[in-house]
Image (cartoon, rainbow, N blue to C red; front, side, top):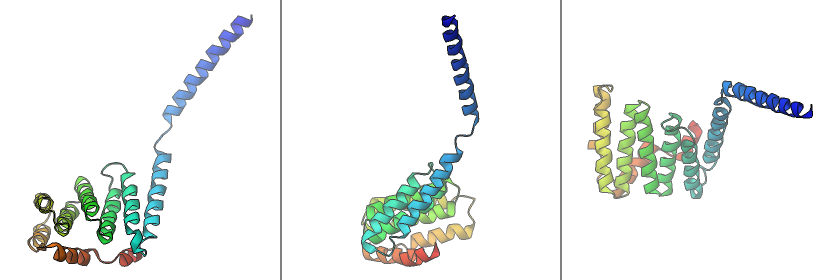
Amino acid sequence: MRKGTILGGAVAVTALVAANTAVAQERPTYELPAIEVEVLQTDLHQQAMDLYEIPERWGEAADLHREAAENLPKNDAGQFFGYSRAALLYFYAGELPEARRSMEDAAEVAEATGDLLTAAHAYVDAAFIAIAEDYDGMEREFVADARSVAASEVLTEAERESVEIRIEGAPSGVSSATVALANRFGTLQALALAD
C-alpha cells in the first residue's frame, strides 16, 4: 500500500510540474525585462546628465550614456541618443578615438532604423572627429559612408545637398575641425537644459 502511495505521489508531482511549466510558458516573458531596461536607461542617462557641469567627469558621463545604449537591443532607436551623447562628451573630454567610435555607432543605428538623413550627418560628424584626431583614413571612410547613405532616393535633393555642403566645407586641419565640431554640438550645459 505504501508503495502505491509513493508512486501515485510521484506521478501527481510530475503532472503538477508539467502543468506549471505549460502555464509558465504561456505568460509573456518580455514585459518585466522591458520595463527594467527602460528604467535602467533612464537612470544611466540621468546619472550622466548630472555630470555635465563637472568637466573633469565628462568621460565618465560619456561612459554612462554609452552603457545605456549598449544595454538596449542592437539597432534599437534609443541607442542613437546614448551613442551620440557619448560622442559629444568624449569629444569635449578630449577622448577623440572614443568620440569617433561612438559617433560611428550612432550613425549605424540611425541608418539601421531608417533615419538616413541623421545617419548621413552623423557620418559627417564622425569624419570631422577623425580630422580633429588627425586620422585621415577614417575621415575618407566616413565621408564615403555619408555620401552612400545620402544617395538614397528616400532623401530629398535638398537633404542630399545639405550633407554634401557639410562634406565640401569640411575643416582642413585639427584646430579647424575642433572649432567646427564645437559650433555644431553646442555646449553641454545647453544640452542639459534641453533635456
